[in-house]
Length: 112
Ligand SMILES: [Zn+2]
Image (cartoon, rainbow, N blue to C red; front, side, top):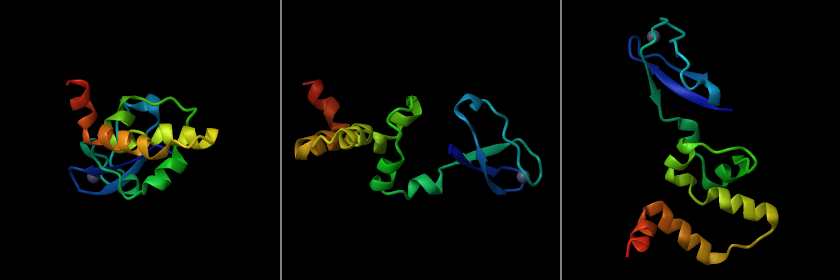
C-alpha cells in the first residue's frame, strides 16, 4: 500500500494518506482543519524497516519508478530478491558491488 504521512502546516495534525501512483498530483487535505497546505513526512513505517522486510515487500513484477531508485537503500534489493526467487546465489562479490553502488563509489570507478 502506498501510504504517505503528512503534517498539516496549519494545525500540525499528522495523518496518513493512500496515494496511488497515478494520483501523484492529488490534493491532500488535512482531515482535521481541511487545509490543503500539508508537508509530506518521511514515512516512519518504511524508515524503520529492516532490509529483510524490504526484500519481502518488493514485487519484482511491479514496475519501479524513479523515486524507487532515488532511495539508495533500494539499490541492489531488487536484484537480490529476483536472484532469491530464481534460486541464484549472488555471493559476497555482489554484496560488495551493492555496497559500492549505495555509497556512490561505483560511479568513481566508472569515471577512472
Ligand atoms: Zn490541519
